[in-house]
Length: 142
Image 1 (cartoon, rainbow, N blue to C red):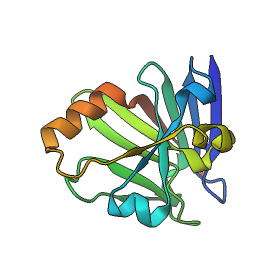
Image 2 (spheres, rainbow, N blue to C red):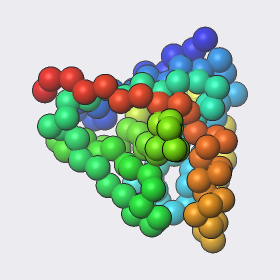
Image 3 (cartoon, rainbow, N blue to C red):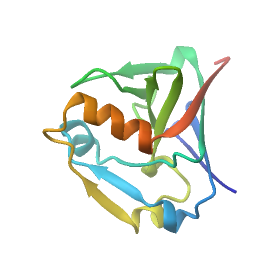
């Protein structure tokens, strides 16, 4: 089992992605939506893994757009988005921002382009349920 650690720029929001896949197998996806293009964001996930997000509640800013179904977790101090989460009926799923992970260079060496333009909301939620990582969020004291 591998654990990929990362954080926002100031270190307030931390992520740990556990996966049975090596970084070269896990890879990354660069989304072509307007938000991800503006932020130069690439994401990774493993449906067989676990994503743990730890942060102080007072340093969290949340952002949703488009279908309003995913929450981008933004550090209120440094403005970095280290993770995105989505609640699928009874489970929380997420993706980790590759650029925030210590292994980003290896992950970005295997980056694929993703274009979800025109994808229906139902198809989008089905894709997330199939490919995003089971997640947990733990709040700490600032």
